[in-house]
Image (cartoon, rainbow, N blue to C red; front, side, top):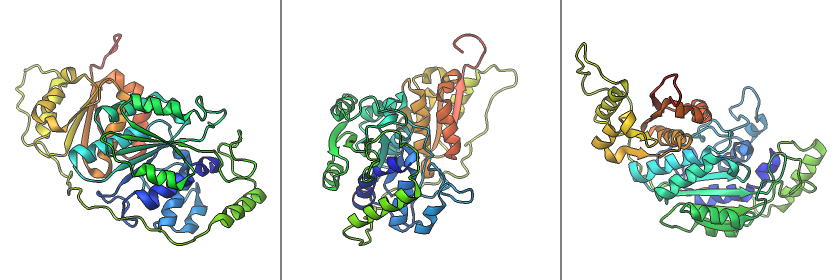
Length: 387
C-alpha cells in the first residue's frame, strides 16, 4: 500500500523523531509512549520508522509479507513494537482509548498514546464509540491523527477534503480538534505540542501517494505496488529531495510507570456454596470477580450498562476505581479491554448480555490475533428472542 504510506510520511516522521518519547531497543517498556496504527494496511511505513530508529535492520524491510518474516502485511504483536493487531478498520482507536485510560487512571504515568487513523475508516461506527468514550472520560493523554488523504479503496471518502466537518464532529464529541497541513513538518510539530484537558484530534489534510509523480491524489492506486521502472524513478526523485541524512534519535521517556505483576493471581479463598443451594451463574460470576479483585489490584472490570444484571456491580462496589463503565457500546468495550490489557498492565474482565457480544465478533477476532489476555463473560444465554 505505497500510496497509503506516502500520505502519512511527515506525520510518522514527526511523531517518531520529534514528539514521542520511547526507548528504541525496548519497544514494550512500560513508560514508553504508545502508538497504534489503526490504518494497518500502511504497515510498511511503521516498519520503516522502526528501521530508521535502529530497531529493525533496513535489509529486513525487503522481506515484507514473506512467509518467514515477522513483517506481515498488517501489524501484529509478533513484532515487539506492535501492541495490538490492526487492519480490520475502525478498531485501533478503541484499543488506544484503553491504553490511555490505563495510563491516566491505573498507572498514573506520563506516557501518552497516539493513534493514526485513515479517513476511510472514519465511516466505521466503532470509531465514534471510541471518540465518545475518550471525550466522556477526558483522556487528555490521547491524540488521534486523522490522515485525511481524500481517497478510499475504490472511491473517494465521503467527506473528501472537507476537514472542517471532521473538526466539528470531533469537537461535538468533546475533543480539542486542530486542522493542519499533514505534509508540513512545522505545522505538525506545533499541533503535537498543544496540551489540553481533553483528548486531541489532529485533522491532517494530506494527499494519497504524495511525492509520486502521476499517482499523487489519483484514484485506482490503492494497494497497488508501483511498476519496477516507475518505482526506481520515484525512489530517486525522493532521495534527491533529502537535504540532510543525519540520524535522528527520539527523546527518552520519563520512567514513571509502576512495576506491575499479574502472574499467579489466585482466589483468596475457595467458594462457600452449599450442596443444594440455588445460585444464578451470573451472580456467582459477580461474587467471584469481586473476590478476585482483592487478590491483585490490577484486576479490572468493564461492562456495557448491564452491571446490575451481570452482577459486575459487585466488583464496582468493592473496587470502584477499577471498574470502567463503557455504556451501550459493546464493540468499543472489547477494544477498550484489549487496550487496557496490553503490555501486561491489567487483567481485564468485560461483561454484558451474551447476545451483545455477537455484534463485537470482529473485535473479539482481532483480540485473538492480538494475543490478548482479555476475559469475556456473557450472561442470559438462551434460545428465546432477545437472549
